[in-house]
Amino acid sequence: MKNLYYYQNLHRIKDILFQYGIPSARVKPQADLAHDLGLRNPEKLSLILDIEEAMHTDILFDDPDALKTIHDILYNLELKQTVYAES
Image (cartoon, rainbow, N blue to C red):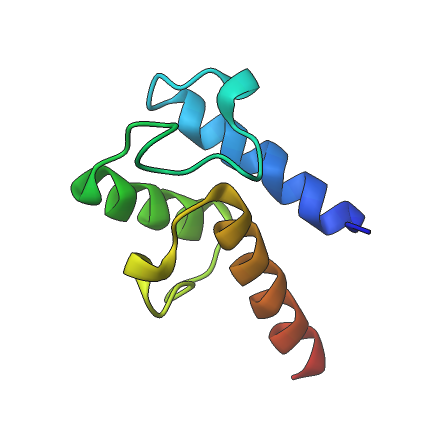
């Protein structure tokens, strides 16, 4: 079961991707960044930077190439939240 934080982050990601011209209806956890959303590597890196800025954090993702889907991004955000909560 997903928590509220997961869905709040999904909404934030939808807002960010809307700026890339991607309708929020296409932004689902299972959406592949390259195949479903059409993001190339430079756009993917830009997206990561935009997410880091929106979340007021830095070095959010250690391996951007490992991020294939929206769920991968959400999972990494949740891991970082857990790490920050434990600190």
